Each structure stands twice: as structure tokens, then as C-alpha cells.
Image: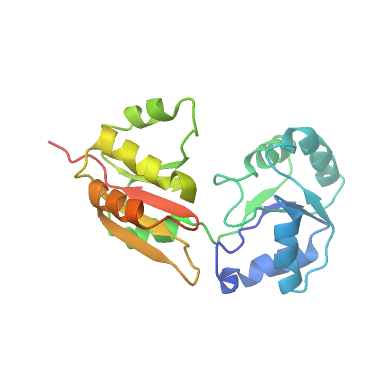
Length: 223
């Protein structure tokens, strides 16, 4: 059995009872960063074997993991925060396990974009999840492709690229497009800055962006 186990994006209390049980019972825990995950497991007094599993080694390790699953082991996948597979490692092992006939189960739980989207005040009945934009090559092309998107758009961004992202949003979507920049979801300094792209850009030009961001951008209004 392969479990994809969401872990808190901020507040430790956001982990579910089922997630704790699965982690305590797993034969092996695949962790994006064993140091970060080690703190989480120590906090909940969980002592199970861990193996580093991230975007730089997943192609080399996935075959061995599937073999262990086929051998009867239960494996849990966790990322540094949130749900594995959502802009984090997890997709490849889930795909290969499913292809091999292994049962795959993703537990419900923490995902940063859901609270950001719902609390943004923008329509969330239909939305477009874009995750992290390409850092360099293809970034402008991706944004240009979204210029006519009418659904609410969801982006992940690191703090040192927030201003650049907002500048590009202004160029492609226009200065008056509504946006909500949500940072430090579920943490002590959680904050949502709402306004037009120009207004939110001005805010973060004056106040240095800190923490991890989810940026919600309103879709283009239909004519």
C-alpha cells in the first residue's frame, strides 16, 4: 500500500489523526527532506525508517520503492509541507505504483492553495491551478497563454520572486486585475494583501516579502 500523506503547511495542529496513524504504522516513510520531516516526526513521537525522496533522486529510487511495495511493505510519502504531488515530489511514485498494481491512497489534508483560494474572496467554483511558474525559460510564455483565462488563477511563489511575479502580472493581466497575495498560511504571521495588481505590487515593493506565498489572481472578465 502506498499512502500520500499531507503534512501541516504551518500549524502542527493541522495534521489529521489518520495521518499520524499511517505514519506510525508505515514500514518506510519517503521524505522530501529528512531533516525537515525528522522534526515533524519527532514532534509527534513517530519513529519509523525514513528515506530521502525528492525531485533530484526520484527517478533513481522509484523502481526500488515499487519493488518494496510489491514485496508487501506499506510506504508513506510526505513532503516538507502540504500534500505530496501538489508542486512537490509524489506524482512519479504514485504513477509507477499504480501501474504496478499497488493500491495508492492519498489522505485528505493540508494544501496551501485551498485556504488561500477560499479566503481570497474570488470565485472558487472553477479555478486554474498553475503552481510555480518556470523560473526563467518559458515563464513569459506561460503567462501570455493565461492572458485570456477567465477562471481564478492560483500561483505558488517564493518570497524573492514575488515582486517580479507581480510586475509580470501587471504587464500581462493589467494593473487593475484583482489579486490576493497570501503568505505564511496557517502560521503566526499569516497575512492576505488584497487589491489590484498595482496596489499589491506597491505594497510589496515597500514591504519586503517574507515567507511562502500563494498568489490568487482574478480571471479576465467576460465581455
